[in-house]
Length: 145
Image 1 (spheres, helix red, strand yellow):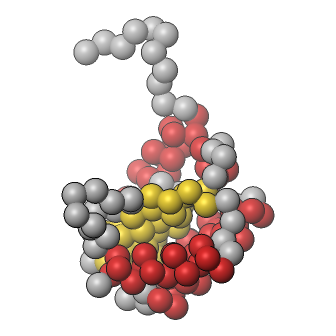
Image 2 (cartoon, one colour):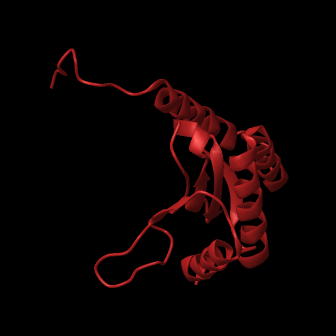
């Protein structure tokens, strides 16, 4: 179906994320790739973030490593993601990535967060204080149980 000429397309940020994902797919299939390579890529992506996003991403990374050490790491659309059996369980999306008002900590379908017929899978973050940290740990534990 043809799009109207004035219909919005993908933003430059969305196109960049898709290109990054294509590169990630190609890289993930490279022979000799190790868990350490994936960890280094995630840490490099975190280091590139603006300070507010970087502080939150570093804290989430530390919480995942401490409370869900069975999860692997990888970049996913250029953002830190945490995996089980190669499938993304949760991810951090920097506010700067899509020029958003807030960062996002989200979960994919492989996370066991089900609560009846409706539950949240994504959480807006402006900062991570003690209350947010406690909630993230609780969500991580539920996601991997």
